[in-house]
Length: 197
Ligand SMILES: [Fe+2]
Image 1 (cartoon, rainbow, N blue to C red):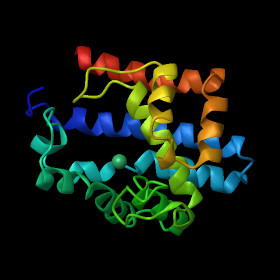
Image 2: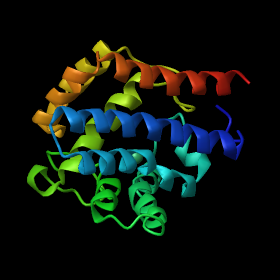
Image 3: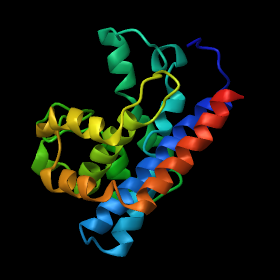
């Protein structure tokens, strides 16, 4: 895709993904019987986890070819940018931690701090699972292909060492829930309409 699509579309894409990840994370947290306050903090972190992408270079963020090392490092700055932006508005350390660490992996292969399972907060482990699942099943500006729920879970099974197993099991148990399907449909449907206009 050309790199000159308008900034509003970029913002809407980031927030629709944020809403889906926020709701998915909320329902995972409910499934894990976390307290209601924490469930809402997790949802809020999901809403804003990728706003730092607004500070990335569009030609790198939406590049469809393989990224080089410098471009990959540039993309990996976005959780730090998200934390930097949101800390001016939200004063919850739990939410800010989730935003900063939503790309950490349990096997230590994530970023920006390369944390391992026990050092990654529960909120970040939930956001990670919800974020990857949504990225696989949803259409994005830079990727036309999207996967079914079944295909997405099969892909995630192939890299299951990256995820908290209890959180991953909770994701699998909620994805067929009608309220989850509705939320995912609602925010994907909006994006479909934007793409067509
Ligand atoms: Fe992200």
